[in-house]
Image (cartoon, rainbow, N blue to C red; front, side, top):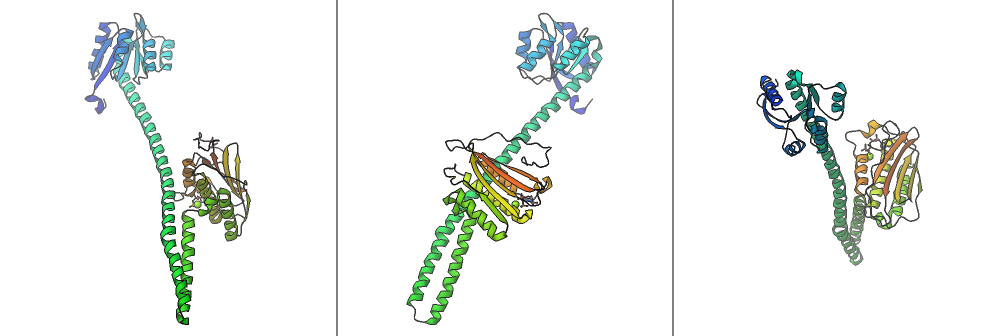
Amino acid sequence: MPPATRDRVFRILHLEDSELDHELLLAHMVRGGLMAQTRRVETEAAFLEALDEPWDLVVSDYNLPGFSGLVALELLKANARDVPFILVSGEIGEDTAVEAMRHGASDYLQKNHLARLVPALLHAVDAAETKRARVKADRDLVASKQRLHELAQHLQTSIEQERAAIAREIHDDVGGSLTALKFDLAWIARHSSSPQVVSRVQSAIETVSHAVESSQRIMHNLRPAILDQGLVAALHWLASRFERRTGIDCAIRLPVDAHDLPAGVPLVAYRTAQEALTNITKHAQASRVQVDLSLAGGVLSLEISDNGRGLSADDLAKARSFGIRGLHERAGTVGGWVELSSGAGGTIMILSVPLSPLGFVEIPSAPVHDADDPSQWGAL
Ligand SMILES: Nc1ncnc2c1ncn2[C@@H]1O[C@H](COP(=O)(O)OP(=O)(O)O)[C@@H](O)[C@H]1O
Ligand SMILES: [Mg+2]
């Protein structure tokens, strides 16, 4: 006997009309070395009432006056009680046994073969407990994944807020001081008669101008001010800067107008395009890139495709690569999703965000992915 059962008291609900048969069950339990706390009931009402208590097992006779073991089994399931159920009968036919098992009975025994009772009971209780533990572990895993997902989305949002706050401080504080400094230096240059001082001041003005440019660049990287002019203008700017920097052809197809997008969507789209273009620069070895933005059927769709070397599922599984993973989470913050497909022709990344007519974002059900299609890793 497993050590865990030695000191355990099994709580058994016995559905049985014969006191004698109940005594027999108890005798088998004692012989099998099991401690049990049992209760005998014989009517439907008593059975239902007893179900409110916690039981380790139900042992039920097949034939009862005005009631039956199979009905009891159905009631047990209907009450969502996850208690193992063993059916016992004088002459149980194979059909009945099969039916009982199909309806969720753990086991069936013949009254004249009750020697099997204790092993059957231990097995049924153990199986039910394993199942319960598995269901709990599955539920915990789903909850933990959900929490992780929420945390990742929260981090993305916090990062953007923090960036915007730093950009604001650089603008108000550093930017303001540098501008004032530049004015003062220009004043000194105008009011000085010493060529040496003027030359020094000019050089200082150049340094300050350089610092102003740097702070503007840093501010832009922290929070793309170009977005204030709308997503279309920002994507235009991103694409032309990419082309200038890399020499890779970047064709763009953008709608004339993408105003009135829900809050957060333009920044998510901008960051998606930014990461996709950075990835193309770093990894794709492409010679042509296409950026398409469309607003059709109430869905904003941003597609960035390249004709580079393509990527594999292994690339996306890299432990230290968080760019694309971050995009999935970012998209989730506005109810959208990112899909990737790749093949010999290059890589395509698509961001989709459903927009309701009122500008509110609806949370869609996740798109269906074909796990066997090697060109689709949208779920990753
Ligand atoms: N456009 C692309 N073409 C080819 N490979 C790519 C492309 N985009 C991403 N990859 C591959 O996918 C990996 C994961 O990308 P990402 O999550 O952005 O992380 P990181 O850029 O930091 O490596 C990259 O390391 C690269 O191998
Ligand atoms: Mg990247």
